[in-house]
Image (cartoon, rainbow, N blue to C red):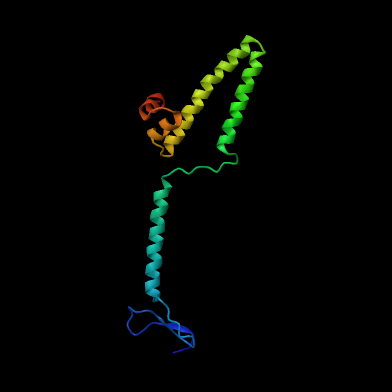
Length: 139
């Protein structure tokens, strides 16, 4: 036997032993190590396939609440400006109401796509899950 090399013990089911000055024994035989690695690889693959069906959220550069608050300030500012303007500008501002409803419907669809319940959506909207589903779930 050479010093410093791993050699299997007499029975192949036991751990390999290091022959050398340190007296340290390896925990697994090469066959046992391969089996462990294969098991871990299968576990990793199962996790990857389970997660593959879930949509991932994109990372945002701007916090969502800051973005919504900015939109609110723009809309309120538009209301003040339209109040000092002509009536056709009032019509343009009223069209934003439909745009806002479409944006809310898109947001609700996105929340549902990420697995949010109707109860959670209803709570956020200040209504029941049934009312939330009736308003946005049928589309």
